[in-house]
Length: 307
Ligand code: TA6
Image (cartoon, rainbow, N blue to C red; front, side, top):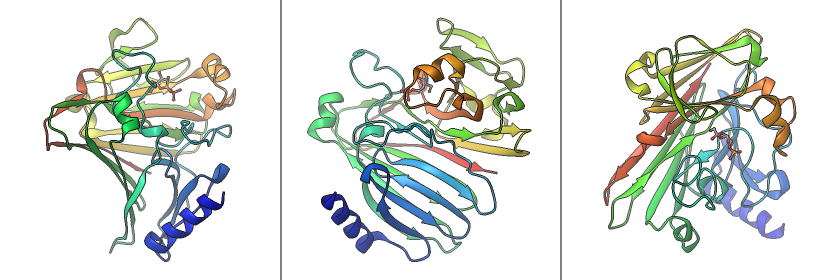
């Protein structure tokens, strides 16, 4: 605990910004960044570079967090925006490797903090390859996560190949959105898109109606670049009487997930009725949308969330 306290004091001495950003001890003593700039509040854990809260001034929280989330070193946090990298889902070859890669269970380093002239706050986190990452993924890389907090939340995940060989990356910003009632919401922006139904033998299907959720849903929409309305998805929430807009770049695949009753019950860090108040819409590089980066090349996956 003393070590973590010292770490937080050192982070505040170097990176805290008056009226914008500071570091404090979070759940289980894990270091977290608190942001409050009058436009919005947000919270980010260094563990996983994980955004666990975003709330524009005068609005309800936009992200859903599991009240049973586990905050332990090396464990994924349930809710908010998990950073999925360098692969999405199960590892293509070795099923013993962690689901959704290792970025979400690794502690990130702070690289910069900025108070922007327009009142927004910017936090940049980074991670590089280590012997531990090489054991899971034998490549040299630099990964940065730039989080800009204002009335909108902008998240940019940049992969940089710092090695001598081409590598392939996949991933996602696996965002959990807070909704009033799953049966009184629908999602717009994926009409006409094809998707892989992960609950039906990965059969390919077409979205021929507005997306409503009345059962477990686990779909990977692909080639969403052309068909999606100007790159924006909209959650229409009739219970909270609001829309959430999700704009994305650097992505041609989108995942929509709701565990519904049985899967919710089966997850220890998820409340039995939690499926009623969340939906995941994930800006991804999944399946054929993975990116092949040559030495020196970079790729940025981004999501902008607003009300
Ligand atoms: O993104 C959807 C998904 O891949 C689902 O299949 C489901 O497993 C979900 O992610 C949660 O995965 P997690 O590893 O966080 O339990």
